[in-house]
Image (tube, rainbow, N blue to C red; front, side, top):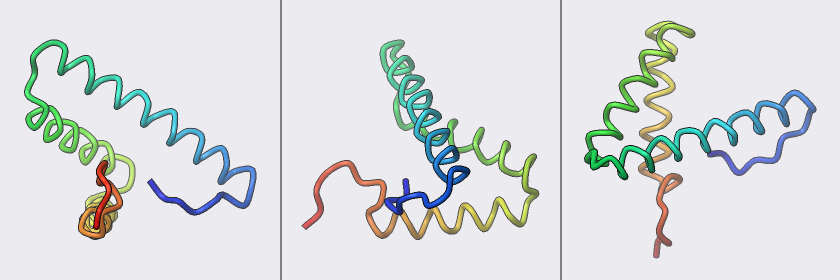
Amino acid sequence: MSTVMPNTLEERRDADARFAALGYVSEAFALAALDGIDVDAFAEAALCAAMCELVAVHGEESAAQIAARLAERASAGEFSVSLRQ
């Protein structure tokens, strides 16, 4: 998630919605793990489901651009849960 502080009320609402959504996704991961579902398999399924939603909402080209930015952000360590040295 981005660390930039929202400036407007609308940006704050968007940030709050994204934070709430992340909570739902995290809970789904936890429930799947409790049911014995492989975390890697669940993560890939979640990414595929998310891409389907992005394509439905924004179209293929915009969804591909979002995926490219996610790849860049992952390479930069934005999604790492451990400290990087």
